[in-house]
Image 1 (cartoon, helix red, strand yellow):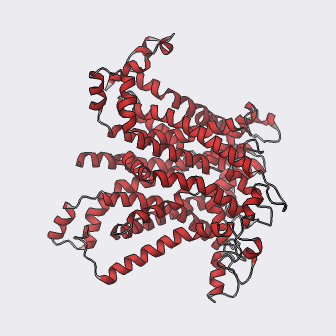
Image 2 (image 1 turned 30 degrees about the horizontal axis):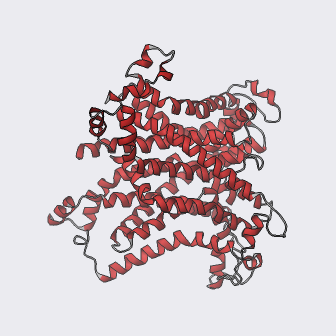
Length: 317
Length: 285
């Protein structure tokens, strides 16, 4: 375990450091030092600045307002702001719906592909396709495809004779929400499908055979053997996904930018509008904190589930 | 598996049909953009719709690089270079730093290990948009806004936690005995790491590097606020140059989209085997 001590006891480092840093106990901390410094400088310090700013009336156009402490006013205003609550509710709904749909479709796709014996590798490659796309590209792609006058969807519906008037996919509020969710699901279902497929391939065969011998029907086998085995993989996928829920911002920024008339405004688009366009950095940072807490809660929840599943798996093996 | 699940022929066809439809949905949007990149603008706007390109052209790409006489000459070549420099530099540094961190988590017991690991993961959770607000303020005061350096540092911080997560999983896969045996045979721990453990973890490091590169290459939320001019604008930010208030240059944007996706596509195909292994082993075992 601790035999790699001398690694970091090169002369250059030993210069002027305390007894602690010479002891074997220091090695892991030294190895982690660069990572900690970077995270400290680029994430932690900015978060503190952001925290301070959320208690000031900081306006980008007047730099001296950064020191104008206003207490909880920004947060009070947020709580009384309908626009914010709509965006917050919409964000929560957006994340909940898309994560669930992605998970269900991903599971379905993994089960289907798992049944295919020939060309499975090629299928897996195709499934990785959306994972390589930048969210901004996904947004552009669907902005183009859902365009009411030249988009692929309306063109196809026209040529099939199903519609005579173009459907305003991105112009109507409800349809726009559907469109951004569709894009989000398109982008992220693959992650679930690929990870769950990897889980299915690692599935031990003996318990399934035993269950069949004992007279379980396919549904029972799935429900009581396959699904519990897959759960750690579900949590990995959920954790990886929840790390990045906010990347939907890029997509929405290019597709609707919160429009039409604020109907697809999520907390992330509202935040940039308040901060950069209206220059109200104080209020934007208050909103930023709400979004950070939202993201952390999501990730923390799935991460806990993952570690629990991990120890469970460890015990089983 | 096949012995257990004996399907009737109609079931097998149903499965194949389902897979076909799913794959079509995954492929068609991307293919449509690629097709558009090779169409003249008239064809895009034509009604009734032109499905198969009648006059394939490379004009859109020529236009991007200012080779065509027609209208705008966007500095796309410069954006491409910026993107490459920023992504590659931040990836290399993040992998080295993250590897050291992952090794520490995989091989040592120390006080606060679990908390520190969770802290790293949670630091990755902070949404880019939310982080961009204070970074914008600080970077502006430090004078590193609109520089490649400013963005490289940010991307390093974004990629380090995930690299730690992946490499931790990979190092834990490698038995400690191997390194210990090498040391008994006369290697220093430093040599043992580079000669034994590093080569074994190489596929994991490759997948970590690919993830880091893709994240930096594709990132928009932070780049859009921290870059201003051709000095540091990246490809995803440059893509927005094509949209005006009411008009969108569809063919130009499609051509640029193709340029953004090609490097990502090539890289992913090279290492796709490691990618999946990296994600699942890093997580479960």
